[in-house]
Image 1 (cartoon, rainbow, N blue to C red):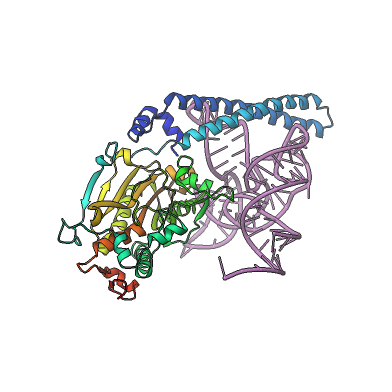
Image 2: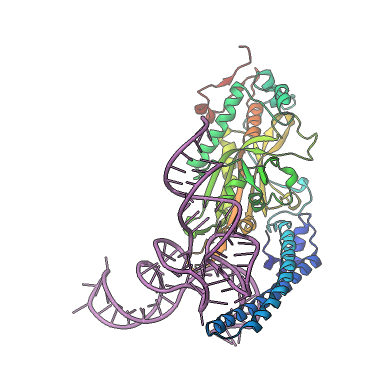
Length: 431
RNA sequence: GGAGAGGUGGCUGAGUGGUCGAAAGCGGCACCCUGCUAAGGUGUUAUACGGGUAACUGUAUCGAGGGUUCGAAUCCCUCUCUCUCCGCCA
């Protein structure tokens, strides 16, 4: 959530900043809602003040055995007024809050202005270590490879769950598990994150806190037989909500959490996109990285976070590039976002495999997560960041496609071999 | 799922209808005293939001929400969390 005070004081500047994110702020509406609310608050408070004073006087009169009916009547009159004001105030507060909850985060100054992904800024290409030699050849897609190898069966899963789900067998299943373990091990042992096992179902408030709600309900799966329950679209939600309503000591920071979890997305509005394979699923696994840091550290923390995601790709020797998203492509809650895109030979394209964002105080404000400054002892909102480290299904696809050899087998990346019972090659089915 | 007990400031813990934002102690901070990392003394010490240059001041907050009342930490209802016991279960 945007700081309402900041917004009010810098209305034009912030409104033009948000315009770059394709959000049109109605300045007049904001000012009106804000002043209406303010007026009601003041009236409410002054009436309560009168009431409190009178009640106190009544107490004194009564203890002296004096008559207090006059004053009691005055309070009754005030209470009637308060009742109607309270109603109006609640409405005004609701309106104000709704407006604020629907305003996206302010963009960082370093975000390039642009309207679509064409305006994103590619900052880095890795050495394309694994690219197969013959670039003109048509490479099979990971799902086709999987089918040939007997590890993947789209028809079977469609019968039980429908499209956008997958079933993996045998070595693919093992590879999937290995990737998760490998990533978690690197993040916990080398990047100092604490591993967390999270719930896959969360309530409405948790999702409002991280920014998925109220605006993006259609992207979520909501449980039907139980009120106010949603499947998580990413473990960012439970991980970030761990510290909700907390005041941390400055010395506690930074706090780094990582989690391997299943994620659920309705993928509404993406009909026909990425219909094959593991790229776009209703259900997928992902290792998530979440950071809570001091505001002064957050920009550095983002660079490190991106580095942690890149590290996994480097260790897997997968070709990738790093992209700074332009203003129009940066998400609702984010101030600045880097995407890591992995090379998929079959698509002859780089595809997003990680998205790393600095939310600054946007989520912390919604979740009320603060820290106490060591010197000034003042409380302030922490900054939160998160990124994928990485999406398992897409990583598996990338490994399968990039490590395909000329015989149609897949070499297991060196770093995964300890996790794969020293299997080096996924053999063709029936061998 | 059933039965019971409980949730008060950084902590311990008083407080069952009025001057209670809340005693006392501990802890913290400031100063004083003291010839030395002891003991003692005095004062101070919750948070959020709003008004005022400021001194100061208003509102809210005793797990959460609602109710009764002129007035609620205190009475009533609902929820939630913790603890104990029983049942069930991976």
